[in-house]
Image: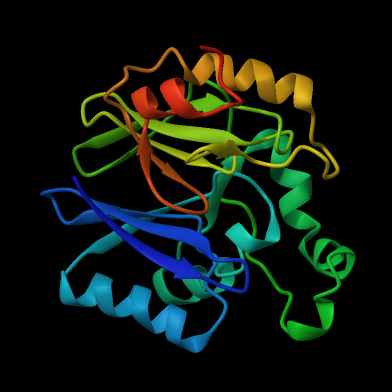
Length: 215
C-alpha cells in the first residue's frame, strides 16, 4: 500500500491518496480548496498512473469534503459516507455560514452521495479492503477505515496524535467519543494511524501516551 498525504485548506486538513499494486486508488477526505491543492492531488495521481475508484469521507464536516465537487468533476466519483452523516454532508452551505466562512466559497454545489455506509461494511479498491468502524463522538457518523492486512487505519477526526477530535459541535458527544476510543484501542498496537489533521501515529503509541485513552 502506498499512502500520499496532501494537506488542504485553511484548517490544514489531511487528504490521503491510497493505492496498491493494481494502481487503483481511493481518495480519502478530499478537502482541497485552492487551485494549487487540487493540482497537487491531480499531478500525483497522473504521475503515478493511478486510477481513482473511490472517494471516501471519514465524516461530513466541511473541511473534509470541500473538494468533493472537484473529485466528481475530475474523476466522476461520488462521495462515500456513513449514513448517519448524510444530512451533515448535504448541509454544506449552512455549515460554512455557521463557521463564518460562507463568503470565502461562492460555489457551494456538491455532488450527490454515491453510497451510504454503516458499521461493519467494507469498501474495496484493487486488492485492498477497508472495514468500516463507526466511531461517533466528533460527529454522529464519524467512521474509521481499517485495513487489517496492512495494519493501517484512517481515523478522521476521531483520534489524533496525542489528542482527539472536538465533541462540542452539533452531533458531537463526549460519551460516544469515549466509547469509540475504547473500541479503537482493541486494534493491534502496530496499527498505523492516519488522522484527519496532524501527524500519523500508532495505536501502541497512543495507548501509552494519549491522555484521552484508557491505560
